[in-house]
Length: 219
Image (tube, rainbow, N blue to C red; front, side, top):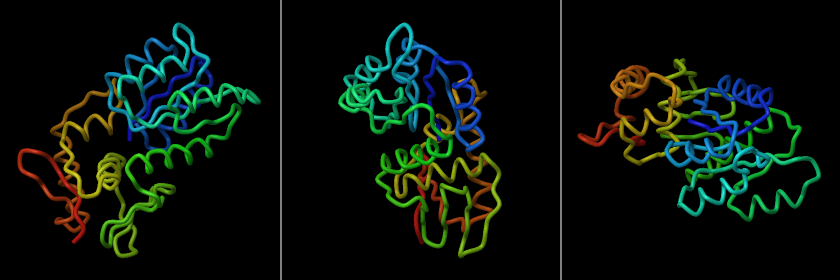
């Protein structure tokens, strides 16, 4: 999953980046509203962490512009302590959740997982496809109760597919959502990761839809 961090305070932005990367997310960053607006408009993000007190263009304006342009990615706003009016304005502008500074990284990660699940129409943190389960909290993947060891990229591909059960996902879409913008992307490597997954899982779980991409199907 790919997340955009928009925060102008360098130390906090680095803490957020490090925490999200450690949790397995592909991360892009912006430290001002102008760059944030451009990235959010041109990139494919599964969620955004947006500070409202930004230079150049404030976060509330950026959020309103995204929503007015029809961009629907889940957005969590970061607000100052006791500034309830800022929270209200953010929610009214289209934010999906808010988090008050200072906060614990564990809470932010839990809220992000919830935002991404709900955006996919999923309620449980444990994703299920037949005998295959993926626990988004722990990153544990199991088949019939037996843990399956996956590399980080294999996990990212499977995680994205399991958030879209039954939907056809193209190689380009997978590439956009498992790599950050500055990563040397190659959509051909998706075939490699899918091939490796098929060796570790029942091969019929990941169906190739000729000319379109891949689809996760329960047996």
